[in-house]
Length: 401
Ligand code: PLP
Image 1 (spheres, helix red, strand yellow):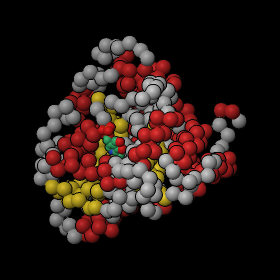
Image 2 (cartoon, protein in one colour; image 1 turned 60 degrees about the vertical axis):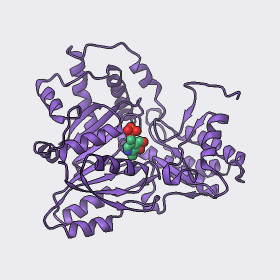
Image 3 (cartoon, helix red, strand yellow; image 1 turned 90 degrees about the vertical axis):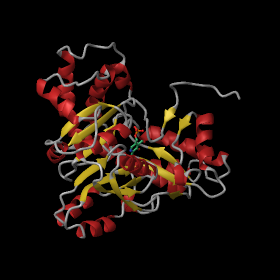
Image 4 (cartoon, helix red, strand yellow; image 1 turned 120 degrees about the vertical axis):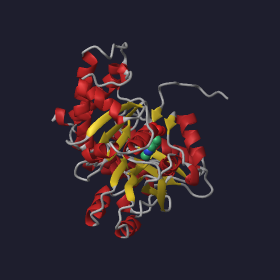
């Protein structure tokens, strides 16, 4: 149909996989190496030390696993829990739904707390369940920090506070796939027992590495957890950590060098500045949505996500058509609405390697496509609202002051 395939040139503004920075692409453009030589363990040692910084943990033990976010979920669950264990899990969108499905298929007794898509986890119900669980039948709380399908960020500090208030020993397992390295995330301070992310999100790497970090309490739990695990067994990693060779099986050499370059970029910008940049991009996007006269799928400000915005469209517009046309006409990748919100929302991913001007380009693309599908937006309205905010809030680049 005349569609040109311009591989490698599209602008990915979908919420993952995201745009990879050039220095990271160059760092990965290299040959394989023998992972048993001294060089790869030396590199791995620095990576394990440095990934702890993005989780904000000093006491956690990280694992770099050749997998995706889904495998990282499985690693978190099977290493810490036994079949039949009661866990509380919040259903608020497609990714929490998929995690719950995995928990059920792994034979845990999942106590699902459901909310409307667009709302955050219902922590009042969590409080009730913790209050009535004197015999500590609840073994874990599983929560997605940032629900990528609806652009909802849950309040983990409150989850921790509830566990502390009720002196409840349940493990806290957190999916940080679209939050870690972009949103404020504090593993130690919030007493998170297992936190996990995937390489293709805020770290801006190719897909293929699941990064899982376990607290001392989670490592302790892994000694008695009876779930069957083989590929994901933390114990295999720990054996090789002790020996100083680090790898129970063959790592992707290219991804390790990519991770090194990605972390270097993040530390050069400063993790706190990275988080502030995401906050600016999130606010700017929401201002644009408001200027377009459209609604955010996220129902309350307290849940607004600074990594992904799910935009609701009027009933006469199919949001999937917006995503299709953005790609076909302007080479812009947006995120589709998933499952319950398919056709009703499209998503703008503003996470990882994206800056103010890339976002403005995306917003102007969205405006053109909105007009194209018959929504009467004033061209430039969202861009103007976002730009006015960014003009007043974007700091000087530190190295250029
Ligand atoms: N968790 C969240 C919050 C996600 O957004 C995703 C994917 O988008 C996943 C888990 C699953 O990750 P993967 O597709 O890498 O398995």
